[in-house]
Image (tube, rainbow over all chains, first blue to last red):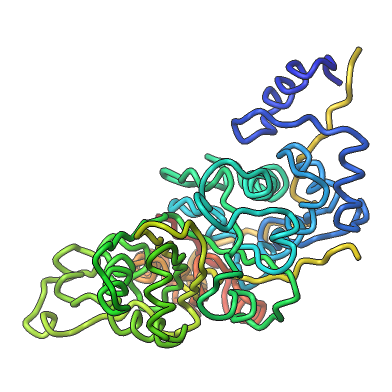
Length: 339
Length: 94
């Protein structure tokens, strides 16, 4: 129990270490019940498990965290689906959640629910100002901290972390999409809503104002995806590209397919072995053969996820390097909505 | 007036994880190694095993390579380690 004035209640949650460092919205019986009803969940329903941590994620706790984060009840189906995605074996939660690399869990929302909830997919899609973007991602992170044993300094060993660890949720711009939306490219139908969870420890904005064709533009992406400080240089990367503004128009007008873009990036995201050795990313002294031997960073087109989001004006896009498909893979989960 | 707080936390669920019996002596034991794919982890584990071999006559019975540091050791590998090893050395961090 705590003093019921709002400021005292908020302080009580801080004192118990139950927040992400920002003030929370104190839940009530009513708000928790509404959160569960928003996703049609029973209190004791299990949303997922992380066996290696002896963690079981129960709906009621997720509802409390969603209420703390400031979610509206209608956001809860997205939160629940994202948690299911984090618990999927392919996501291999322990690595991206605990690593010194300090990943943000990027949530990409597709399908009809994105517009209904007014998730931002346009200007400032990664930034502040939209309640669903801010609070859905926050609810997932609070659940990770409070339920999934992912507390900084304990089983979250991030050296630096990144601001996306507070919240990182946006919708894809499906109205002006270059091709099919992300969730369709990953096997779902367009009428189905879905959320894709993807672990990335950085967000690198790519600028190019002069390119008028795909090749020079994509060389910038390839360069960003093959820098010497990349976490994984072993050749089985996964990456997320968020194509925006004028860059999206260039690709759209070129007629290039998603596969062509992916193939181009696979071919050009590479470094000479000698470069990697000089930078001590590989052991040993560079040999003459190393000067002409290339190491490619991607092996499969499907490991390069491409979405469209962001404002229409401007020559900015973004690369978000991942960890490698053997360590964690993006997981796309259908969002169960209440009819 | 006071209001209830809603506890958002959940601890790990209790699962019995008994500690394996300690060996009565070290000489001649069979070592199982679990390599998590971190850079040089195989070298470090083998060097450790080599020292144990020289000091106590131990031998490496099996080295298991995990899919990645994120993943657990699979059941088949655990079963093999159980059958072929007297103890297991695991765990390489950054």
